[in-house]
Amino acid sequence: MDADSQITSIAHVIQLAVAPVFLLTGVAAFIGVISNRLGRIVDRARQLEASIHGTPRDRAIEIHNALRNLAKRARLANRALSLCVACAVLICSDIVVLFVGTLAGERFGGAVAVVFVLAMLSLIAALLLFLREVYLATRFLRIGVPEPAVDAAAASTPPT
Image (cartoon, rainbow, N blue to C red; front, side, top):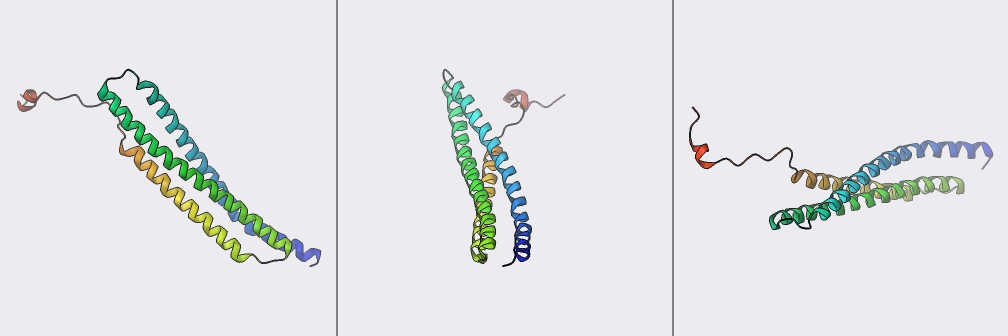
């Protein structure tokens, strides 16, 4: 292979590698989001664990339930984070295979396709786990102050 055709081949591979690099940027941003959520989950769990000592039994049960929910959310976020990192590694591997194939003069199209599909499956699974974690976070969400208990006698009397 002469120098001009090799440069042309490498330029073409760089063009092909641009899309996975943009995808890698998006996955990196998603890793940042999940890492931030995981950190907040851990901070909240530590705060609740510190507050459980010396609390009344009914409040301790509420704290244990909240900790159980946080543990589920942390597992989901951790798995989503692991899958995103696996996706990023697969994307980087895909780029390497593109370049190695070009430099070696081999066609690794099948390998590139398989690695890319595995990366996308990892990303899909991570997104689904992230969605589940967000669902759990909002399922037990309480915003605002609780409404005061209404006295039964006062509720039965009509307003004047």
